[in-house]
Image (spheres, each protein chain N blue to C red):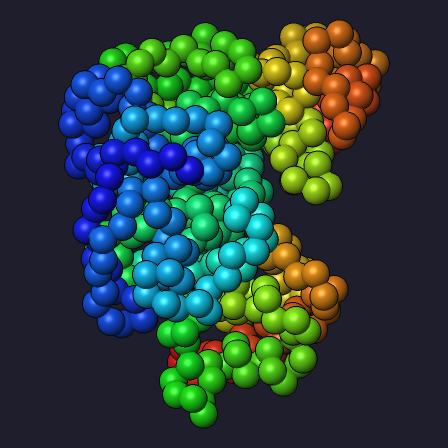
Length: 265
Length: 161
């Protein structure tokens, strides 16, 4: 790892000032992706702005019809939160299956969403639940936030402060983990909320995406039988040593049906 | 960038000057000479480097030493009461022959203790196997490690640790 200047601000305002004031500064939340990236010398930031000491960024609260989760909230805290388990059990379950216990003790929701790894789990939840992402400068809708491979609507010096998820009627997330890395080869989050039915897919393509045909079918009839004939085209999906695009396209259908069945349980 | 860092390791106040990029595991092993915590993969997969930071198990190869500023760290060296009296988890690993080469053992023991506490001293085999996801052992096939953890859970409860 190349060396860098290290900062540990106590407030979002201080963090933003540091990020804007330096040439090549990078924010660090849990560091579960950034530290391995630095070790491989795939990045060379001049400054690391550690968000770990900013208390206002962590925590979970219920506000009306929404569960609002601070950007620096750890996966382990989401997984075990009574509020999340009571209102959006599928989200608690998703968080409880990210990485392993030690990783869940460090990795954060905001970090994962801001990084937008194509195989990350949280983006599927954010899109399927039509969550709202709040930053120090404003709000983003889920559909406008994830732009492409590791790309989001965040601009420089913009930090995720919280994400607001609506309570669900029914929801489930099912993934097919890579047998070695345990990252999602394909993960499908199916959700029925007051706003309708949404189906979001991670792992399969360069970025999380929705399957409109499945959403329409499930809105009429929320059963796995309703989507059994819906195929996802393999054209833009990932193809690598772990699986072809056609295999991933097939998995989308299988995971979606399993997710609907799990949501109906 | 050189930074002064201070923390508590196994109940003892320690400090040192580190580079910003120094990992917590490097600080423990190379600055403090506490080589019980191992580096297996250096890619946060294997769990040989697991230590406890402020009551949470973490992979010390994927945390900077400066991030542990002011923290209470417990390593494998901090578990046994004395040279003659091991922690119940260490004792259970010995009793059940839960190690062969021993390289993964410090991380296994640290993760196992965290697991037992998080599950309120009540574990079943399926839970233990699932929770060991972040700790790799290349010798034992995990069988005796699982047995040791299941045996240690009630022993830890009665010992009050």
